[in-house]
Image (cartoon, rainbow, N blue to C red):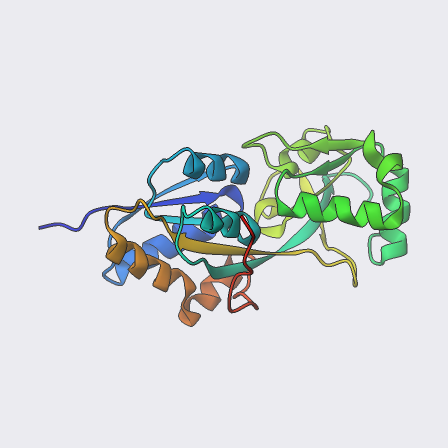
Length: 238
């Protein structure tokens, strides 16, 4: 009897990596995986609305919140993702090599693209720390659900953009400036968990075990992510 297909829900940031890991899982004899990637906020809402998924992969804080609501089992780290900076192709690359340089760059920028996910929230915290939240507020362009920040930058809607390196890499019309300057690094840990409504928890657990095993580190690096530094996911109070 053929194995049932495993459903895997994720945010867009991890889609290329999870697609590659799903193929590797199947090639290693695991169950077939049907991956659906949407905006992280939308993914969490769908789980909260009662949709059944075998495995869910989201930013660790979002997944911890779902665990606190009893919607997924204990989350485990899957990969760490760095935030990068991009401008439109043909734009003279600004200096973003230091905190002071990045600050000057953003004060001169007419529009700044950022995401609705954890990288965007962390960036806004940087602006707060600088005391520039009000100054930059009118220049912020938030990515719409399903639209990566890089697309806003390539289209000229944002002069400079910040998002996970994995989401900016390979998009046409962009020049990547690299990661955040020293001392301002933004790293998001993406985690996975078996859904409490999974109809095939053993197969789901086998997939999660595969996603988190040390042997997948090279594949994660190939997709501009790293093996997670954390060994557990912090708890979020309900």
